[in-house]
Length: 242
Image 1: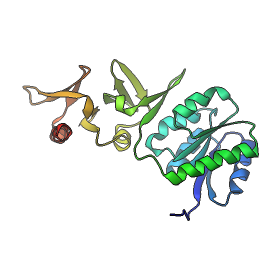
Image 2: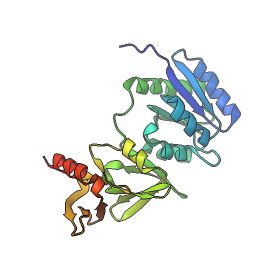
Image 3: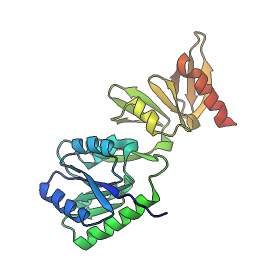
């Protein structure tokens, strides 16, 4: 089936000239509609969540909230096609690990942009991935791309969540409600108001004399289970085993 709607695109760059250049190139393509033009990472987060563009051209180095910050906080709201645009080549590996389709190094030619746009249009035609497979975690020195299937359990930590992977723990700027929405409901289940568990990592459920319960994971970690979530959790565990 031929696509009749235009591809919704957004441009994110803190340099006005760079945004203008990308805007001109995009508007030349009759299949693309520019729905948002953002001058900062914070603005990009608001606009991408509101406008839902299918294609985003994203700068890496921006003040306060850079391109990888944007990726980390978007979570499951990532566009179908993401193209990084930057003057620095040292971020290329991280960009592709994050799921970027292409990496435009400034200054780039019109021909190079055309190749990137062609690939992006093909990716959009294929559709958005059915589920989130990796999550970007940014700290002061690096960006880590963690496979969601490797996470044992998730713990609430004020304005963050703590992702437990074996003996390691990683802080992610996301709420528990967002994690429930973004992660596969077939694999993850709420065990407590402050805990979500990967069902594939559960070894057994232990009951306590006071009526409470704990999950024992394959790593030996123990996760509390509240009465509110126990029935659903046991049902999900039985379904997983069958």
